[in-house]
Length: 325
Ligand SMILES: Nc1nc2c(ncn2[C@@H]2O[C@H](COP(=O)(O)OP(=O)(O)OP(=O)(O)O)[C@@H](O)[C@H]2O)c(=O)[nH]1
Image (cartoon, rainbow, N blue to C red; front, side, top):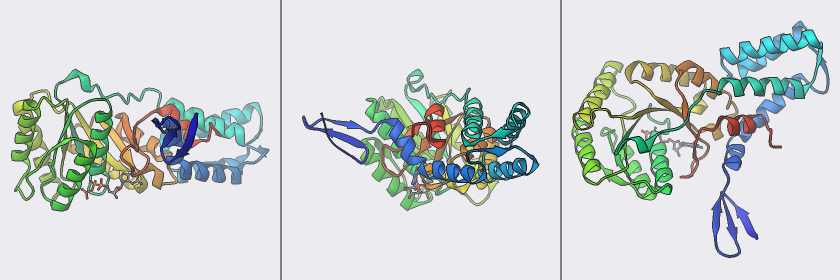
């Protein structure tokens, strides 16, 4: 019997605790986006509306303002037009269905799996601008893998910001992960080399590497990231096995510019989009995905340690458009 239900966990009379289901986390995290979508769409189309030129203009503006991205927007407009040929009158539910189906189709091939069991240790590198949520993501990842019984080592590869190293150390402790740092070092190569050696020696399942988010200029950042890769490959030639780009979901179209720049510097294998709970434009995920052409692997839906979730397109779409209501 359920005793009480509070913030993320269900506590039972027998003292056991189960964690909040994923559906709840997606629903809670995407509440602002869901409400905005619903209000915006309802203001355009209620019980019945004729699909005419004015309506098409308004719906086009709504889709662009929602940051859905050009591909989804174009396909949505086409589908709405097609539907108007069959029946010139539509309603909220019908338009909502069209939008939801287009999102589902968009993410159909998105493979969020990270095959950590394929390598030992599995080396995962995290990049992104400062403030995007890199540190938090690393801590949450180490925690999530610890829950699966995996042992992680976090390497503080952003040696330029002492506060960032400290913050990362705190996250590592909370996640029960090992940690290695050398704050103030001129460049991160030494600590990364030592860290990889330690990970191999300690038989870590995962080595998670933080990198600097902003250096003097792009050439400098590129030089540093390629040096990091070279150092890693001296010890593990086929690593890193995953290069994740962390993007702040609240920055909208700016996130696309950042993503593009990082994509030129590093072979990005997957995306982590954070702070989706803090935006009303959760549809931006589709635009980011479209721009980068790599899978969304994780989404950040809150600040707590278990608020980073593997991206699940069905749960995401259902939460964004209120399917479970
Ligand atoms: N609401 C919310 N906040 C988040 C999420 N992810 C990260 N944050 C917050 O965003 C802020 C920045 O996160 P950090 O992890 O410090 O970002 P960073 O990229 O490592 O930045 P530096 O430490 O400056 O290098 C922190 O206050 C986090 O708590 C999320 O999914 N939801």
